[in-house]
Image (cartoon, rainbow, N blue to C red; front, side, top):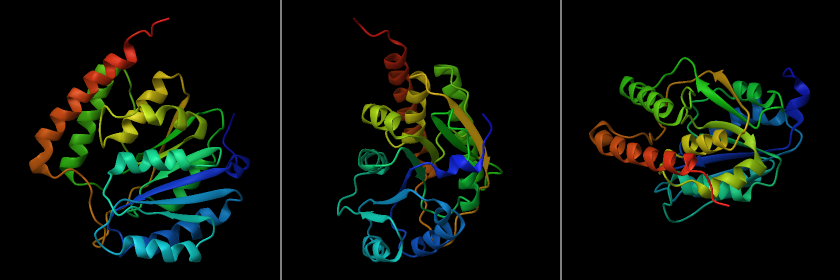
Length: 248
């Protein structure tokens, strides 16, 4: 079935994790609503604030009154990206879930491309093209994609990119099982979806440079070796779990 505008009438819960983004989040939401969300008829926006040290939580509380269908989910503690997304998935009330980073690097108009994708697919994943990340992050990402292909037989480009559209029923069934890869959460969720037999489509979306006021949550180079080793061990454990036949 071909993509068409009728598919964009789907019921969608938009999950946006944010951390220390008080300076940019209003601008991100203004653009997101103007270019995309105002065209949806049935949606909710869950702003998943994760123990920010700035005024992000206070700003989001104001946003609740300024933007339709928006709910600020704040927490005084830092629980991490994975736990924030897992909580958001459990709270989602619509038929589809759209996971979207709140740093403003994704062109909102391209989100519409995912929403128009065929409903024959269970998960639609974005791919940054062209990528505007630092060179070392691009290399790390490509190496991780390669290792994932070798160890799990999953050939997906930019697998941990935080732009995913998936059926809520699938996400709520599989998200609680995630935990092997830590903060490489969206990659693990996609791996589990694929092994569960879900149908996948990947779509290229424009990627923008991080603004000067945005807070980077990527892995710093000096911690890369330790993180890489932890991710490798997690992949081995995940492969064992996913490829071991279940008992009667």
